Amino acid sequence: MDVKYINPFITASIDVFSTFSGIESKPGRPTIRTSPLIGEDINGFISLNGHGISGYFIINFSQPFLTHILSTIFDSSQASLNELQDLAGELTNMITGSAKAKLSKRGFFFDVAVPQISQAVPPIPKGLRGKPIIVVPFNTKFGKFQIQASLLEIEEDFQKITPPEIKAPPGYISVADFAKLTRIAPIKVRRLLKTGFLKGEKISATQWHIPEKELIKIQGDHPPQVSYAPKECPTLLAESVSLEEFSKLSGLPPTKIKNFLRTGFIKGAKDENQVWWIKKEQVSKFKKI
Image 1 (cartoon, rainbow, N blue to C red):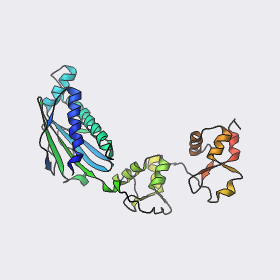
Image 2: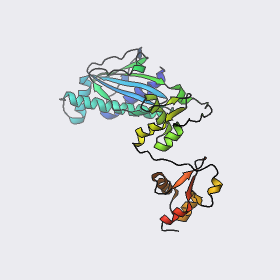
Image 3: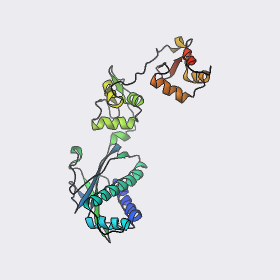
Image 4: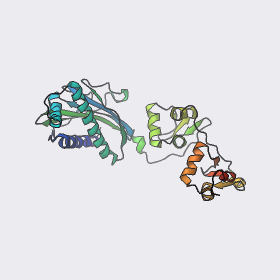
């Protein structure tokens, strides 16, 4: 694991505690482990999975440290365990969100999951057990805390050489087509495939073939069907018009026409270049002709 991956978390921790509660914190010397350290009292754990990166982040709090932060907010020296755990969750979220913004500038993108707060470190995902963990201790006037991170770069997400596209066999569709039909970004479709939520066959480092039945997981039992016009679109020109021409004839904006096409209110078909062709007679559905 490269130390550059944890630097955003170090900076974020310093910034969050300084801004949130006026606490100045100094990072100590980092160490490397292969199993997480269990904190003194309360641990915040959050998994990090996305484009280019996979792993987890842990922050270990002492109860006196969290109690002091709560006292600066509510002017009270008393706090229940539930209140301290809620605060630990908020701080874990804030630090991870700030680090996420910094990592995104380097091309790493991930969703921030709901943090798990406990007095024991949650089970580490199977694929990440035994991987290097960087541990950074912090000292403050009001107590100690430490952060731990184990992050792996997913090299295939940054592969620059794109192999030739292999056409999906009958009953399967490509990631690009799946993304269009479900309106999910291709990056997220690949992540769903890697995590096992979607079933598919990996063809190369960047290509997958997905069974058409997997659409049900996103669209429900009755996914909308997209019909395709014959390759010989000139034979349709006498009775069909392009989306742009239909817009001029009907007075509808192209974006609204596309929505009507997706819902089936307007009947149309796509050619092999994914260009929409619409029966001219359907203009009569609209007042402006």
